[in-house]
Image (cartoon, rainbow, N blue to C red; front, top):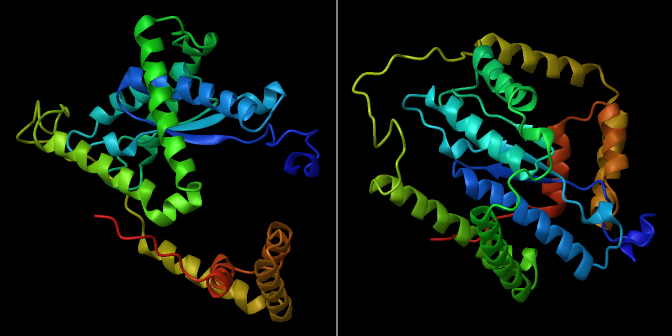
Length: 292
């Protein structure tokens, strides 16, 4: 019904939807994760939601390399980590890719670090041959077994969330928060105990490291931006701003589509902070359950 209302020819979900994945450092596991995700998406869309169009069953994903795997120690090692993660994403079938800069654990990236991150993508795309075929590792016994295992475990999570009443109810119960916190704790524990090698941190450590140049933002930029916002607020039409904020509040209370109102609001120079204030006034502040 929702699909028909949206003009999708009976399809429940628009073919334009896409997802955001993280690519961690375990090379084959990350490839299997994306392969399993595509399989799950196609199966769930067909069997659970009745999709019939191939476009609706085709997973589209943006993938970003894992910031959590980057280290402040020997930060140039992060170049290799990012390259491995990015290649895993490509071999797993990502349509869009973000490569982190090697110095992001220290500060905002320098121009040199950003360039290295960009060149990493370009080398994979234009030199490695990795993107030339679909699912290049398909048929590998190890990878197929890993993909099957990933799918089985992911579906177990989906069934558990269904039993809790869906994702909103699961969040209210603190279920995903608890699972994420537990996984993060176990990961860090392996690091602390030396059960997981982190090059430059708990193995191949250097007593002295060369200082790395980091990006420093001039405080004058902040002052200039504050002054610029002040000038905009002083010269905009205050009556229009007030009207747009009232329209936004009304749409929020009625459960309508806020996007057309937001577009008109920003055209009249309503600020992001003022828009956020309306959301806070209407919906309040969400406080998730405390998880130990």
